[in-house]
Length: 95
Image (spheres, helix red, strand yellow):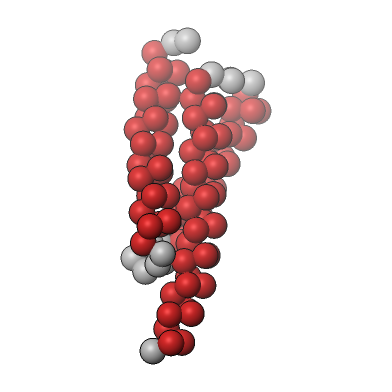
């Protein structure tokens, strides 16, 4: 593992730290308000591109594993956004 791989893994880890916090916030808040689905989809696409690039180049290092982990967490956050939007609409109909 060279320094570039170590730095890439550190970058992916630092991004990855925020996703569990975002998932917890989405789960607890039960609202999609204040969450940008466009941003989440763009990040999801970025992780797909990273995974694809690693796969094409056969560069399966630690960062590759964290790309997958982050992709699943962002995917979970996207799923929660749809759940929360449904809850928001239900709440709006009550008013």
